[in-house]
Image (cartoon, rainbow, N blue to C red; front, side):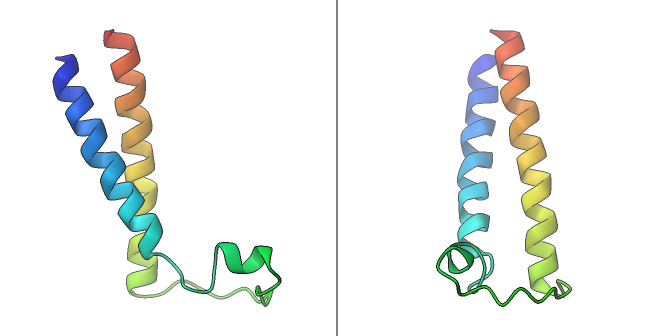
Length: 72
């Protein structure tokens, strides 16, 4: 069963990397360089969907990693 968990974990990790790269053009590293305006705004539309999907994939990645450790 472990090879299947590893394959699922690889697929989830690639999807997670893609989603993180798709998120927010002005967020992330922009805040590090002083580009962050500090104004709170609500996520809407595709930005909210990407955010929620990222959370789901992070939880899935964590659970598959934990399960993979417990099986081995």
